[in-house]
Picture 1 (cartoon, rainbow, N blue to C red):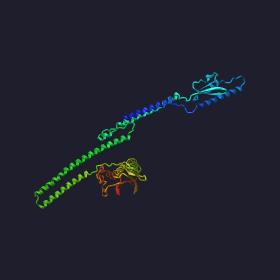
Picture 2: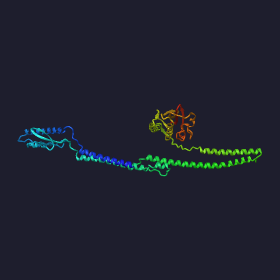
Picture 3: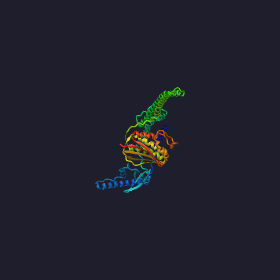
Picture 4: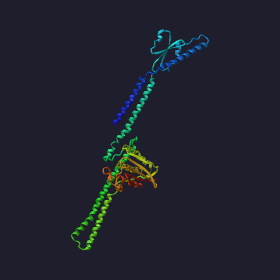
Amino acid sequence: MKKFNRICVIVVLCVIAVIGAANCFILFGQKEESGRPYRVEVSRLVRQLERLAADTTENMTGEQGEAQPDTSEALVDRIDLSACAYVTAIVPDAGDGESFFEGNSDYVIREIDGERYRFEYTVKAKKMTSGMLWTVNAALGLMGLLVFFVLLYVRLKVLHPFTKMENVPYELSRGNLTMPLTESKTRFFGRFVWGVNLLRENIEQQKERELTLQKEKKTLLLSLSHDIKTPLSAIKLYAKALSKGLYTEPEKQTEIAESINRKADEIEGFVSEIIRASSEDFLSFELHMGEFYLSELLEELRVYYGEKLALIKTEFTIGNYTDCLLAGDKDRAVEVLQNLMENAIKYGNGETISITVTEEDHCTLISVRNGGCTLPENELPHIFESFWRGSNAEHKKGSGLGLYICRQLMRNMGGEVFAKIQDTEMTVTVVFTQV
């Protein structure tokens, strides 16, 4: 927030500087124009005076009586100088000698019908009027106010609400799942707040589910361990009796042996129950089945991995395909292909990764291929098992669950996943059912 405040101050100062520079340019920055544009105005005014003088002469000859021609001063008074940018005054020769040539500004002399006229001019165009100056300042001021209010709005309605959420990821990492986020009235962070709240709820549900599973497994183990004690005590008792020769009859010994065998079967059953409970699926594969287009699925991969792989200089291509509707959960389908892409990045040689699409028996097959595969052929059947990691993953981080999750998700969506190795290329293919 402090950095944004500094940016606001800098922007306001820049606006003030622009307004000041504009005023200085308007008031003092007008330069003398090149050439002699005032001569154009002088020539135009000379022609006007000549026409006025000619019109006066014609009127005088066409009328009866003793009409007198207009004087030089009268002719000059009939000239409008308000539209002139350079000529400021026209002074006729009053016959007072040298005083005619004493002007307060630059001038030129022209003779019209035997009379001399002094055309005074300035080499600068007329400056902008005060009304125009106020208009420019008002426009710049409104622009500055608009920029200021936009920055203020961003600070109050965008950055300030966001600062309230900046500690949420940290609190979630600490296990604080009690405080949900509330959306502001502007709803700038609607999807973000919804996503964080959904993440918080999912973490809370997983935590509760984990506690429930741990409680159930602990209860089951305690119950089974207690149940094992009974047949185990009987076996120990029978074994002790046999070792001391308490049963000498062959029939009795056979009966005792059969009892020991039955008790051993009971213990074997309890052990099988423990193994089954320990091997129960501990992951949730909740799906929202529906329909989605193949192009939507591949576009998400292209947008994300196109940029990511370009940064690490890995060539990434998606082959030609015909768009179609697929059955399944789109989000889970993206998760599956992301797992395959991450494996290709982690275990490939980093040169090329390609995605190809084929069709077969109303199914769409999407294959992720990478080079540099070092997995032995005899280990290929085990890559979809949980917690299994190949010999090529010795120095790479991982849990051995990625491909296991892919297979479970694809089978739950009515599809399948399989892999093959050809030379040094690894190809993993997922099969989606077409709608």
